[in-house]
Length: 504
Image 1 (cartoon, rainbow, N blue to C red):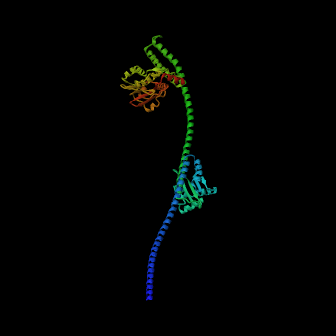
Image 2 (image 1 turned 180 degrees about the horizontal axis):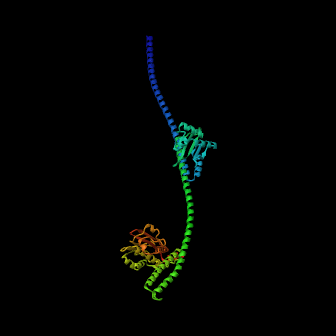
Image 3 (image 1 turned 90 degrees about the vertical axis):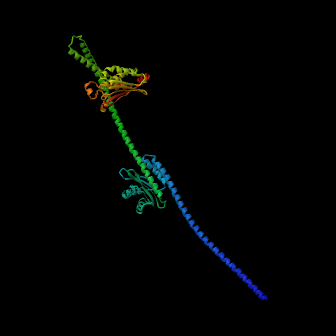
C-alpha cells in the first residue's frame, strides 16, 4: 500500500513536472517566436536606416559639391566684377592689358592664362600671359594661325571647354596648350572677332566647371567691349587732333587773309578819302562858277545855256552828296568819325521826318502810320546821324512804294534797347539781293532803279551809323508784298556813353 501510494505520488509528481516542463517549453517557444519577429523587424529597420544613412551621406556630398560650386561661382563673379571695373575705367589699350596681367594672376586662380589679340596685319599677338614659356607661346601662336576651323568657330561666338567640347576638339586643344582642363573663348566686338582668351589647369589641379566656362565667356566679352571703347576713343582723339591741327592751320590762313583784307580795306578807305577830298575842291569851283553865270553877273545868258548851267549845278550837288557819303563811310570804317552825342527825343525826330517827307508822300498818295511806344525814354544819340538813317530808310520806302501804298514806323522798348521798324507795301526784295543790299555801290536790279538814279551808298552808310551807335540793322522782305527795315538803338545814359568812349 505504501509502495503503491509512493509510486502513485511519484507518478503524479512526474506528471506535474512533465506538465510544468511542457508549459515552460510552450512559453519559451512563444518567446522565441516573438523574439524572432522582433529581430526581423530590427533587421528591416536597420536596413532602412542604412539606406537612409547612405542617402544622407550622398546628399551631404552633393550639397558640399554644390556649396563648393556656389562658393566658386560667387568668388568668380566677384573676380569678374573686379576685373571688369579695372578694365572699364581706362581707355588706354596698353593699360587695359597691364591691369589684366595683374588681375588674372591674382584673382581667377587658373594655372595658365593667355590673351591673344589680332594686330593691324591680322597676325596673332600675345598681349597677356601667365604660366607659358616663350617656346610654348611661339608653338601655340604658330598652330593657331594654321587652325582655320577653330578660328572660324570662335569667330561665330563659340566657347570651348574641357567640360563641353567634343572629344576630338578637346584632344587638339589639350595637346596645343599642354593642359588637362581648359576654357577658350573669343574676344568679340561689333566688327567680329579680334582675339581669344584661354585659361587652363594641368591634370593634377582642379577641373573646369560649366560655371568657369560661363565666367570666362563673360570676361572675354567684357575685354572685347573695353578694347573696342579704347580703340574708338583713340580714333576720335586722333581725328580730334587732326581736326585741331587743320583748324589751327585754317585759322592762320584766315588770320593772314583777314590781315590782307584789312590792309586792302584800309587802302580803299584812304584812297576814297583822298580822292573825295581832291574832288571836292574842283566841284566847289564848278558849282561856284555855274552859280555866278546863272546870276547873270558876267552878262546875260540865253535860256538854253541857263538850263544847262542848272543841270551842271544839280549834278554838282549830287556829286557833293556822293563825296560826302563816301567820306562819312571811310571815317566811320577807320574810326575817325566823331559822333556828337546829345539828348534826343526819338518820337519827336520821327514826327520831323514825317513833316520833311510829306510832300513826296502826297505825290503818290501814300498813307503814313506810326506805332510808337509811349514809354521810350529820352535817348543819348547823334541826332543828325540818326536822322540821316531815318531819311534814307523812309526815302527808300517812298521810292519803292506804289501809289496809294502805306509806310509805317514802329518803335518798341525792349530792356535796354529800342527796336525801330520802317515798313512799306512796295515791290519787295529778293532773297539773293538782301544778302548784298548793304554792300557799297550795290543797287537792286528792278524797274524803279532803272528809272531813278542812285549811288548805292545810302544803306551801307545807314548801317555804319547804326553800328557806330552799338546797334544793328537788318532787313526782311517778301516780293510783291513789301519790305521791313529793322534797326536797334541802345537806351544808354550819357555817363555810360562817355565812359565807353574813354575806354575805346
